Length: 403
Image (tube, rainbow, N blue to C red; front, side, top):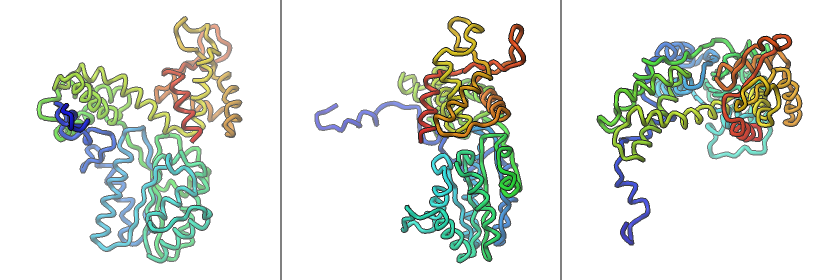
């Protein structure tokens, strides 16, 4: 480096396998969404009434993380908005991530900020903001479509959804349609009956991608993301196989190639092979797991937090495991400790029925191992063992619960 050169100059001259790194990130929005044609068609059918100045169907979408729910929803909403402008139809679409806007007031404020960007509504009541929204819809004879992503993160879920769906009863012109998106397959079972009947007019499930589909998704991005002949076919196959086997999550495969590319640049190999993918695997798996934890509902996070805390303090049925294994816990003792934790976090504990459902879901996500107690144990209690580092899980959930 010369005396007067900038400290970043060296980075630009380094050799790299990337053409456009942004394209191989999970946040990239492709112009086409392969293998989601059926879901797109169903969404178009549900939303098409808005083009006739009629209220669209409410739609509830659920499926595992990385199955294209968010990308598909945003793609369809963008297409609808663009077409509405061409047709001079009065349609407004608003996307809200409820992890960032997790209360009724925050969601309503986010919605009207799209209509009155120059005004500040901080300090006003929820009812005032709600009236501003409904007044805008009625005065402009607008069809407003609101997509609530990670809807299970809402603290006042039933109140907000019921208010938004029942707003149509008060409107003389225009209408409000909702799209709810959740990773939780059993989420709708937790809704108040009134909310469920008003929200779930139509439901869609996004299935996991298989290895062949993931490989095709990767190939579509590789051409634009990497320099020619820098990604070996076997590396693509390995990333696809890992992602499909573990979760059917396309984001996992994308992140594997992203980190593998960074590994190739670091080692100056100028090629992405199986070796780079394998090296990237642990880092990506950890990132995916902690991303998954952050999307869990608070009560489910609290159950996982309790398991991590008990594991750290080596309580539970340690005698069942080997010396170096993580503590093996009985579901009953976890539930007792969970009740104490819930009070500490000022949360109302769920019933044993829902607690058991949460354990089933955590097992399905691969965060815990759950087995029925075998010979020598009383009854048929479930034995629970944490899969990942309890200290890291505890820290991650503490950040989420204290948000």
